[in-house]
Length: 123
Image (cartoon, rainbow, N blue to C red):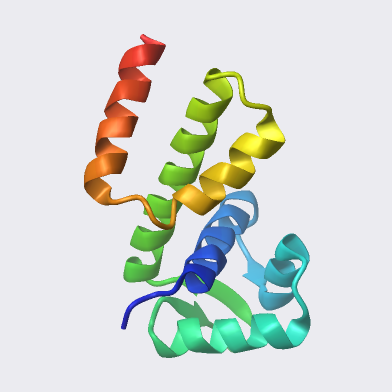
């Protein structure tokens, strides 16, 4: 099933939180995103049903291999795009907000070209 932008945002957030803490729960995701418990609960249920995450009996969330693959891809896009925009002189807040929007719609082909030029530029 195709993962919508909101699902992508949840996966990326779970990935970021797991980089910071070995164990996270839905409440941590909600706090990070500023979303209500019912919204997070619904999203977690969908991600679990679609096998992007696993929720253990204590409520701790982990990414499945497919969930982790998507989350890592989004995180890389977000990081590269925000850093590139900041290197062009855009303030951090605007750069990260714009990168967040771009990361969900840019094609793999376009992103790979942007990434190559960004890293060539940094050399």
